[in-house]
Length: 415
Image 1: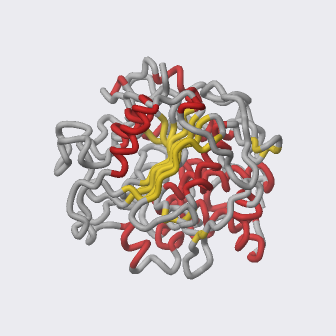
Image 2 (image 1 turned 90 degrees about the vertical axis):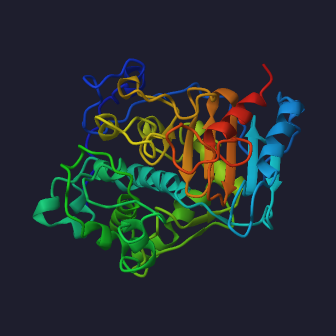
C-alpha cells in the first residue's frame, strides 16, 4: 500500500482560462491540494433525514418563470413509442437548502431510485476523495500500484491522476448506439467486457502518451473503482459507498451495481432518488463538509473542479466533445477562448458545475444562486446547441437541452 505524498499548492487554473490560448495551457503536473474554492461558498443549511420545504416565492424565485420552467420540463412533445420529445422523469430544485420544486413524471415517484448513468462518475469522484483522506491513496502514484491489470511495461507511465482526468492514453472508444460494433463502452457494459470491466479496459493498448490526450472514457472510471479495492477488505469494499459517503449524508435507497468480480461500476450503474443525489451536489457546494464534518480532503473540491490539462491542450475539439468542459469526473461552466469555445451553459453563472449522464440525466450546482438542480430523463433526441450538430431538434422548447434548461433555471431567480 502506498502513502500519500506531500501536497503543494494547487495551480490556479481558473484565472488562466479567462485569457487561455493554444500557447498557454495548463500542463500535466502533479495534483496538489490547497485551501480555497473556485467559487464563493453560500451559507450552509444542511438537511436532516429529509430536506426542508419552502415555496419558490419565499426563496426569491419568480413564480412566472418557475411555471415556465415546469411547463418546459413536463410538456410532452413527440412519440413515446419511439422515445421522441421531452422525456423528464424527475426534477428537483434546492434553493437556500430547501426543496422549492419537486416534479415526477412517467410513472416515477419520490421513492424511485433512478438510473443516473454517467452522473455515477461524479459520485465516484467523492469516493476517491474519501480514499485520499482516510486511506492514504496518492492520486499522483502509478496506476499499477493499485491496479494490477496495468502492470505491463507499456502501461507503466499511466498515473492515477491520468485515469481520474480521463487522459490515461488507452484506446477506449466511448461511442454509443450509433456505432455499436466499434464501441468499447457497449462491449464493456453488455458483452465481452462485462464480467471484469477494469481488466477489459486495461487490455487496450496505449495510443497516446499518458496525460497528453483527453478521451472521455467510462473505462477509466471503472479502473479507478478497481483501484479502490486495494484499500479495503472485500467486506469493507462491498459496503464502502454507504459507510464512506451515503450514510454520513443520510442517503437512503441507493443501489450501486457491481460486475462479476465485485468491482462497482463507477461509470454508469448508480441508482439514486433525485432528492438524495442533490445531497452530493450540496456536499460539493460546501467544500466537502457536511454539517460540520469534513468528508472530502481540504482542497479536493478545488482540484476536482480544475480543468483537465489534456483536454485544453488539444488543437481541435469536435462538436460532440465541446458541449461540456470536463474536470475530474465533473464539468465546469468555463470556455476556452484559445480554441474558440464558449462556456457550455452561456446563460448560467460562471461558477456553475455539473454531473452529467446519458439520455438527459444531470445535476447542476450553482453556488452564486445557492441552488442545486437535479433533472433525470430518458431523452433520445436533443434540442440544437450549435448549428453544425446533426439530427437535433431546432425548437428548444420541443426537446431537452442542457443549455436551455440552465437558461430557464437561471431566469427563475428574481433580479
